[in-house]
Amino acid sequence: MWMGIDLGTQSVRAVVAGDSGEILGSGSAPLTGRRDGVRHEQRPLDWWTAVCAAARQALRDCPAPRALAVCATSGTVLLGDREGRPLTPGVMYDDGRAVAEAARAGAPPSWALPKVMWLLREYGGGAGGAVRVMHQADLVLARLAGTPLPTDSSHALKTGYDLERDEWPRRRFGKLGLPDGLFPDVVRPGTRIGEVGRAAAEETGIPAGTPVVAGMTDGCAAQLASGSLTVGSWNSVLGTTLVLKGVTSSPVEDPAGVVYNHRAPDGSWLPGGASGAGGGALTAAFRDADPARLDALARDREPARVVAYPLVATGERFPFVAPEATGFLLGEPASDAEHWLALLTGVGLVERLCLDYLDLLGAQSYGRLTFTGGAVRSGYWSRLRADILGRPVYIPQYSEPALGMAVLAAYGAGEERSLQRAAGRMVRLRHVLRPHPARTAWYTEPYLALVDELERRGWLPGPVAAHARTRTEQP
Image (cartoon, rainbow, N blue to C red; front, side):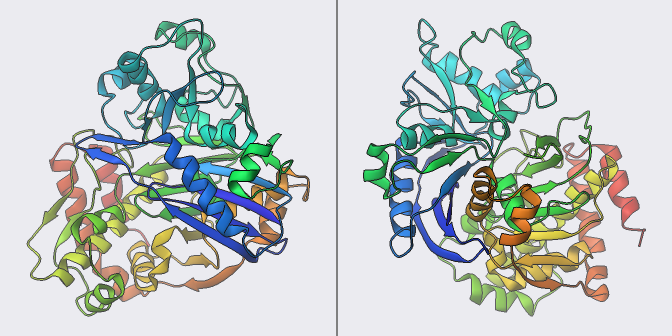
């Protein structure tokens, strides 16, 4: 039995999976935060409270796990003390306040490094090296073990960790005024780093002594859960926001810094990017809606007459960087169903633009494409996205990042020689969606309209827009 814990934006999810990938237990607990313009914070101790509740639910009717791993949102960070206690709020991945710090650091505002600089300015750096940088997962790991544990290189990436040299760039940090001792030790994902302590065992129901394996970010975790671990394969994770992750034999170089490269436990590269567009735009526009009912109404109104750019909050980070970007509609929906369809379609159009951008960078991108994330619960939306992209899509039976962490826990505990073999044993496919050529053709015009408008507003660079247009003329 293997446990995976996923700290998302709106909830914590825990699963216990068997050796063949069957889900034997699951649990969840909600999370809330504070949003105010570009500000987005959560209380770190709320993460731990939710982990305790989700873990107890997951273990209610199944045996104890042999190991566990934790994933969390990429770029969420806080400051803590030497004992792993939080000293600041958790500044979430899409918080946009660190604009000045981002310019100094040469990194997007969504990355953790500018947020660390902002936190030090707002809350102070403490004395004697007492303050430590903590990623979202680090807070939970410290609570599980009863002491701070090393972070993993996946969560550390957006804090500036150099994956090719496997070290913190201390000279660069010194130029930014970041003191020695601020950053945690780093290990590769899949490394055994500790075990569950007695106090945490009482709160979570996870037996004391259970091995803890270093995890990965939620986007990487979803990629593990998809089974897309061969070179050229990609996984599209759609929940509140949209994340694309692929596998390449070497890092994908992006002068604009839009695409970043994680490192897999086996040493291969996992390039990708995270867009601010996604299902959060549906929640914002239709807070009390019945998604299934609106899906049924939208199906009869295809193709969308209104073009939407469904950005959840201010600022975009993939497939372009534009801190001032906001969502918009081209046209006026005549009904809720038309508005719903425009948002669903808009996410698919952004997804297509992301893949076109990866192609422009020379990424290997014609392997298997999988869909994971909360959006796959809508069969209609998955089919719509496949039509917009014009390529076959594979849907895993279980598509949760928490399952990806269960796969990583099995690998880290030495159950399999390779992560790919562990995923091959534990990931099950549900079905394959094949695009309808006639419906794919419907979306060329709205796609070009979106590309034109993004370029007109000065957000999408001209060469990216030109490549996207060229790709519509290719098979």
